[in-house]
Amino acid sequence: MKSARRRSRELATQGLYQWLLSGAPAGEIDAQLRGAQGFDKADQEHLDALLHGVIRENAELSAELAPCLDRPIEQLSPVERAVLLVAAFEFKHHVEIPYRVVINEAVELAKTFGGSDGYKYVNGVLDKLALKLRTTESQAGRTNR
Image 1 (spheres, rainbow, N blue to C red):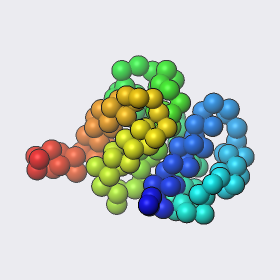
Image 2: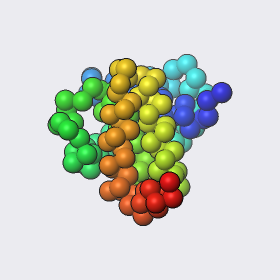
Image 3: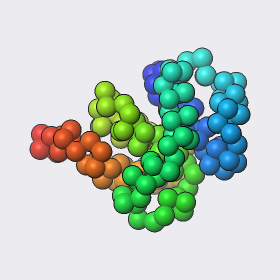
Image 4: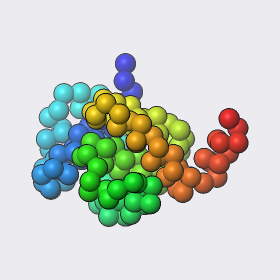
């Protein structure tokens, strides 16, 4: 069974995918997600924070991700981009979620929605981003391995 948080990440990723492709306003995407199957099983507060936060902070989050990428963010698949933006937002604004959990959840999202090897790319990018945004925590994690 999926956790309510995982369901909220899945819905946020789907909403952001739609937003990246259509440019529709956040409110319109939000309204469509509320009709999605499994919406009632999501952590709705976390979903709102992710969806609206990523759309609001897209430029800043993209700038944080840019040095960790091997190409411009606009050239990533919309799925990978949405997953990376969700994870970057969680790194920055949800420090109560361990960085490894953020990475694992992003990898699962990439496996669920993305291409066959997209999850490997997502994992590599987020490892680099964790060093930047969660320096103390990720360095401690590396020395404890």
